Image 1: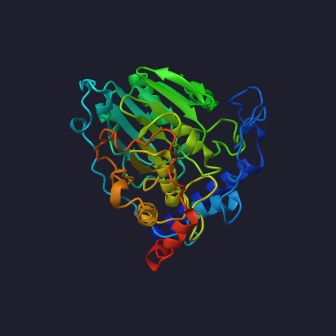
Image 2: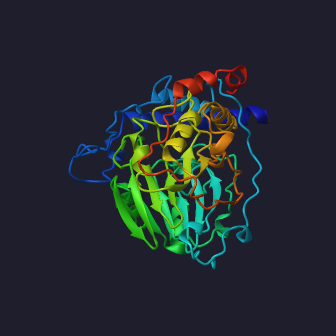
Image 3: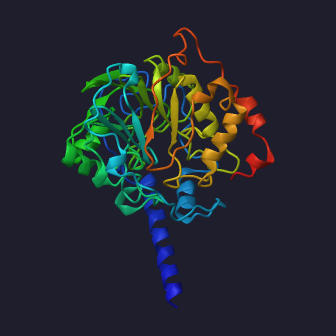
Length: 410
């Protein structure tokens, strides 16, 4: 009897969520927001932003957005099972870069330590500068306590975080812009916040100040220069406010080599990769590999690159080290929990990123909560600026990956 009551309550909740999701796509202009006003240009039409390389982010493949939301709410799409919980060994303060770490005499030897907190939240530390990307400590990625529930606890307890100097916010989706987390960090540390146009209005509404930049603009923060660079995505917090704010990637110029944070991105024309590379040698690249599959066998979507395209991005960046992010924390799509890193491993074998002289350019998953020391860039690794990385043959890589073992990865 009690089981039937609980089941009935669960389904009632599912129906309420689904109706609310459908309602805000149909009804209310009053939920629209004007986050930014400016002159029209090559990626802003005077009211909304757009991808100048073409729009392919309008709806998940395999159906309408409302149908996708319904499948998300019910799990009724034949998706592979995810664990309810995965163990995380959260980093302790003693494992992080000590606050008193002095700058290296040789800038090329500047220490760098990276800790994946989960999803797109990453702590990157160099002497005198603690950087946090898209910080989300909330249990659910969505409004009003709804949305996907995290299966992996944050890799650092919020109370154990060192003082944060700089926060990068790539766009306004709830799994990347979490006002609850940001408010706590802002009240505690008053960090500089850099984001792209329009997202600062959302932060101001919650009592926080931020620097909002357009693509190809930069801001000096402490000893670093933060560049907001193009990627390929979209934005919305209320469905009807679609693309009222801009999305972006970032390059942070640092002693010893740059940090690249891709944010959340599809491939688009891919030329944004070269724009980031042109800003200088990249010591560490944070590149998404998850939420790419919305139907069986899919390897990418318009809004999200998968492991194959992530490897392409890593290689064309010429990055010294890479950390795959945006997987294994919140279930946002169809693929299994461990499918993204397993596909990345297969893609590396087929794409020439394992063995031989290029093995030092590792792009491999690190556990949530386990700090990783990023070694200094080896001068031998750095190619002359005029040399472009060899082309990535995506078709050949996918052909190589067409094996029973890879096809079995759902």
